[in-house]
Length: 78
Image 1 (tube, rainbow, N blue to C red):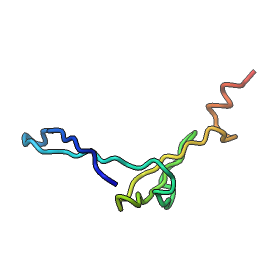
Image 2 (image 1 turned 30 degrees about the vertical axis):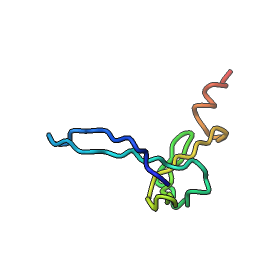
Image 3 (image 1 turned 30 degrees about the horizontal axis):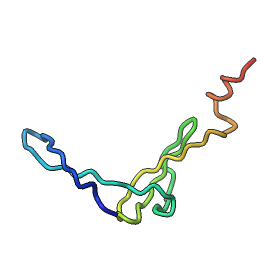
Image 4 (image 1 turned 90 degrees about the vertical axis):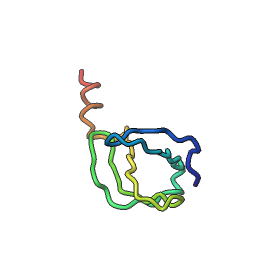
């Protein structure tokens, strides 16, 4: 996986430093999911390994069909 070529100057504690922006792959085959680290009304967050970058990341998985979602139930109350 390659990094985006453009660099941006940022000041960190009064010192200019070059910051490279990484491009993460979007396909599920590029990630290995580990344990769930959090969840909310319509999503859960998992720790995962981004295989091409060999980097631990957080993946948010949305679930809009969750039956016990209070937000959705509130929208359909008569």
